[in-house]
Amino acid sequence: MQGSAPPAAPAVDVYVSAGSNVGPEENLRLACRELARRFGPLSMSGVYRNPPVGFTGDDFLNLVLRFRTAEPPAAIVAELERLHVLAGRVRRLEKFAPRTLDLDLLLYGDAIIPERAIRVPREDILKYGFVLGPLAELAPDLRHPVTGQTMAELWASFDQRAHPLERVGELQP
Image (tube, rainbow, N blue to C red; front, side):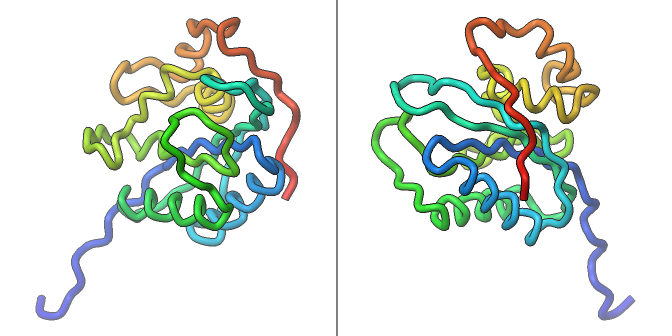
């Protein structure tokens, strides 16, 4: 059929981790507000407090967000980078440092994308309690695209003593 648009990509569930230890409540609210404006309704885990990993500093507040979109992963990553700039994040040479906002694309449906700029599922899911704990709360039955285990199973077998988390409540808009 002449002039017809290509079929739209199907919407998928997208999971994003959000953390901050510089003005955390304000910066996490900013991220949630902007992501909802761009991608629609969000589902959110509770907010968790944890000590910084890899450096000494103020505790982080972390949560995981879910939304549905048909936008490609590169567009989502570009939006996350825009929000880093909006929150005043300054990229430093050291990997572990205080952050006004740290947003990472964790999962894009059940896709496995090994590209350096995108790389999903994000390895942080299996490495850090401040990512896996909130993700397991938000989506306990979700299966990891590589391991096949549910997030609840992964969290149950995770060494939670090495990565202590304290659930401190819900993010209020």
